[in-house]
Length: 260
Image (cartoon, rainbow, N blue to C red; front, side, top):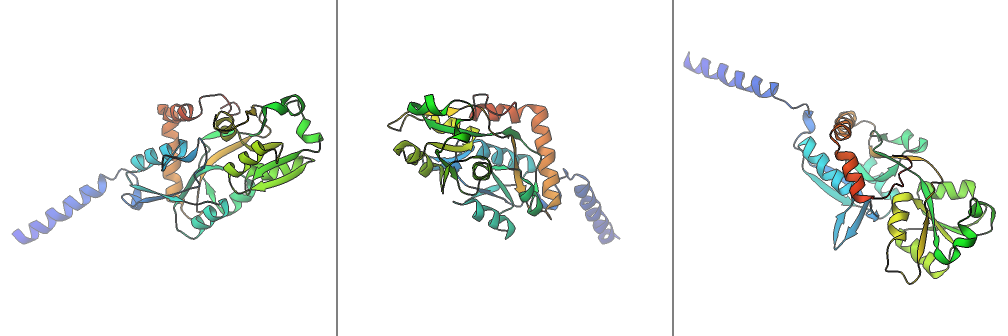
């Protein structure tokens, strides 16, 4: 009888433990594998050998709220980042990814966490001829973009210019400094960050008028519905408790978020 009572007690404790679930489901405790491409200041980039930025802070807080440890997995190309997600090498991409119809067909996106736009960065000495509205659209200028980005799509679809793709923001910025291109088109936060660096021998100018309007979100596999639901719940809580806006303002202290 005592042995039977012991089994009943164990069963009861097990049921109580199940009832105390915090709603994180089967994923709780498993490491969250976060994919990043740390060439996107101030969203995610390397500084003193460490990955830092807005997305890094988001990943850390997300892991705490989901009660899951996290690990960062770095990639150098957007195509490799998406391939890693597709091949189950990572669970989520947190790297300033714009929502596009083509990407939505292949992957699931979280709720958007901010709205940005593509912007142009030029040399300050060229401001008189390039800063006027529409100048880059009508003149035969040399315009650079980062390969695989929405900036590339925008340049190719709208600009009557000589275009050139680069594999990194560093390469594109150096080409602008060297006079190899006349403008570099990229997301507004990165343009702001690069234009304010003082390490270049020439002054750079960001034309702080958005050329597009895009929403940034995190990317998951379409069959990871549980993770998407959890991530969206966390994002909603960040909106309500102020963490989302506070963290964005910390990393992007100027109002270039297209109204957000």
